[in-house]
Amino acid sequence: MSKKIVLGITGGIAAYKCAELVRRLSERGAEVKVVMTDSAQEFITPLTMQAVSGNPVSTSLLDPQAEAAMGHIEFAKWADLILVAPATANTIAKMVQGVADDLLTTLLLATPAKVAIAPAMNQQMYRHPATQANLATLAQRDIAIWGPASGEQACGDVGQGRMLEPLELVDLCLTTEQPQILQGKTISITAGPTREPLDPVRFISNHSSGKMGFALAHAAHALGAKVNLIHGPVTLTAASTIKTVPVESALDMHKAALNYAPKSDIFIGCAAVADYRAKDISTQKLKKQGDNMIIELQKNPDIIADVASLASNRPFTVGFAAETNDVEAYAKAKLNNKKLDLICANDVSQEGIGFNSDDNAMTLFWPEGKRQLTTQSKENIAFSILEIIASQLK
Ligand code: PMT
Image (tube, rainbow, N blue to C red; front, side, top):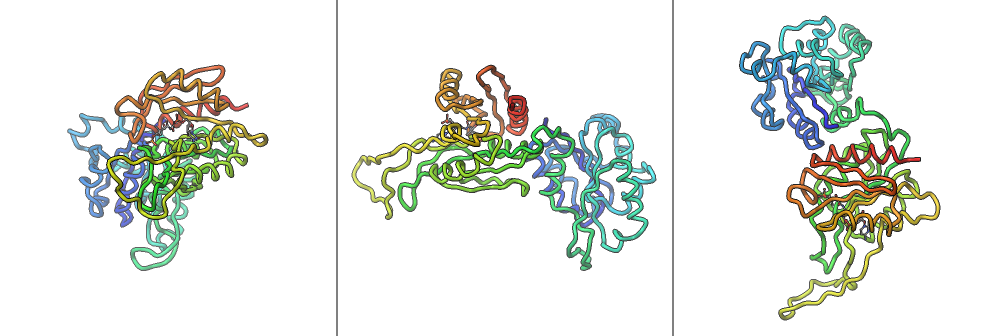
């Protein structure tokens, strides 16, 4: 379900924000191709956009080389969404008239895909009756109009006309047109590693990056759910529409999970929780003592098992299993022993999937069924997992 997005950049000062926009869209699993008008190239270079998108940038309707690679009609059909950002007053007026005098406006006429625009212009230009009438016409044609926001403008004016921030546009791009199969549901997800302190400077942890859990959180939001994301120490940033609960240790995660789980319809334990913590945490830095050192560990509570055992307001409970061998047997044992509704088993011995990678592959087991998901991006896997969960809800 990864989205194919054509980003059409037109000539406004907000074009400089498009590098960040493309980077964030790619981070979230979208495939982005960029089209730039002549005036857009005065604000940001095609080379920059090519570097961040990882795809050649198209700038001309009459470029034989680009046409040979993918003709403009084929290009218009490739997209799931065309976003014009920033959309200047001039491009908006051309869209209303159906002018097709460059590659972007031609694609906009030729595409069967959803079209969205992020207007950005001086506040007086935005308030002008001509612009307002043009926007009303585009809205009537089912073109999504995202923004503009109010605030200080590059020209020094203050008012409505600022392009929405890249993260807001990313959210809109990824949620628009997704089937709202989790509408009205609240999902709490754990993600990332936990850190179990030994002394003020050392801890026990693991290689979980949080990518799988964050992908689940973003996909759940795109499918209509309200999302709480309880995560250990990671370097990722969640969309502003997701409630994040940062924690450090397994005990912190346990407390947060048992607070959110009874208020949730679905609970997913994707975090790599440390099974043990230090029995005593030294208040001072531990000193080197001879060749060997013994640290006594004590068992952490099992978060997902405690959620699955809730006597009241128990959510549909989904666990993960990270295994290096006998994946099916161990995963099924965890499904039963922890009293889960479903388990997602990944073979973390395989290179390129599992911990700290962009891709994953897994088999899902539930009491009456099994489904294999082949190697693909964590963003795609997240959508498939959530579709299966949604189909299992009573
Ligand atoms: O974060 P990434 O880099 O993207 O990597 C993703 C991942 C490999 C971490 C993820 O896909 C995954 O497999 N997560 C579960 C890792 C794990 O700890 O598995 P486990 O088999 O040890 O635990 C089984 C289940 O019990 C898990 O749902 C775990 O969250 C839960 N658990 C474990 C111990 C504990 N004390 N409390 C728990 O809730």
